[in-house]
Length: 519
Ligand code: ADP
Ligand code: MG
Image (tube, rainbow, N blue to C red; front, side, top):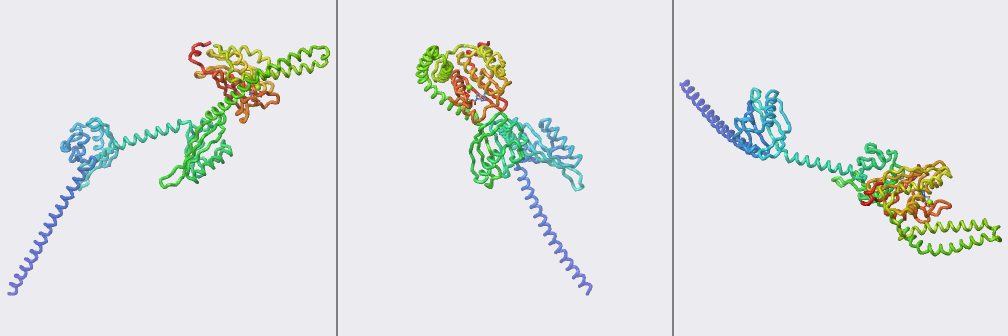
């Protein structure tokens, strides 16, 4: 009986176990279904995600045939994604060079197991040049053998175009800065130069590299005053964070330059200022022009005065001179003849001054004829040589072929003589003067070069002002007359001076008609 009960109990327990087992199985079955559902759901989500990615994503088998490709491929190839399945790039008829590149890529991946990243381009079906960032990786199965490759193609055409545009803008900007005649520089708070454009070389003869990464104090050819001034102006900008506008003078290799400068703070995103940017514009020509105009104004004023009083003074002087000459011949005045000569000489000197003065007259008439400047110089040479030789000074000419100009011969002679005369006076014995003529662009240039000591800056500014002289016996009219003559000939006078001498350039414009008549 007991064994019967035992058996019954056993069966019961077993049944219970079985029921439990069944329950567990049912549970796991439910769980399995749930898992499957989750997996399906996430697969669906992945698919949606991949199909809407703006990147081409695809998988190929070991024969480079597509197993999967997302629909974005259609936008560049106009081939539906499903047409790729089971096919290689070549099978669907993509361009040859594109296919060759990808065949090589897949073979490499399958052979080495390495991933590959590169950029490639492709002319799309609309003829548009597209650029791609490409990445391809091998995919392994459970036995760790390669069974497929996954690749992505990201269209970076817009990025590339933007990059090219930025590069071009950068190049244009660079060209602008490198070719501007303005001097542009950037300095930090320690007064260290972090940028300067090549215009500096035209000014100082020293190349950009010699300035970069140096502080102002480390630049040997900057003079102390300039360094102090430049530091102060920059420090003001760092301090006030406001632009600083001012003018300054700088001695360049071709003479003194006048600059208009603007220093600006370079703001960072957080509002701090670590650098100051400066722009210096050369306004020497403008300054000279203003000075020239002021000079002409002065000349005109004096000229008008000259015209009105010149004659009035000269006439009585002629009378006095006549009587002096007459009386000096009388016997009773013979013993004073020396005084008479002095009086007459002094009157003559005064008369010369008045003559020169008269030629400053604004509306003095000129007798313009078509002449060659060379002929005038050639005629004057013996006279000028004779004048020089007395003091052991020499004059030479170098005359190039030049067209005829409309000239007043007497006036041009006067101009040449006055400038040459100053040249002789400026030189020690043994000095030489060179007179040159040549054409330059559409001008004829007369250059008179001496070997004197040059003209100091404060004197240069006053040249041509009537009665300005640095000589004890000078009249200060020589150059004033020259400027006045040049003005009537529509010519300009440009003195270039240095410690080894001065050259006066008299620049005449060639008119159309004149340029046809070459000597
Ligand atoms: P002046 O010769 O009577 O002094 P100018 O008008 O001819 O008057 O010249 C004015 C001044 O310009 C001169 O006194 C001199 O200081 C200066 N100057 C002119 N030409 C030269 C020169 N070639 N070299 C040096 N100084 C010059
Ligand atoms: Mg003189």
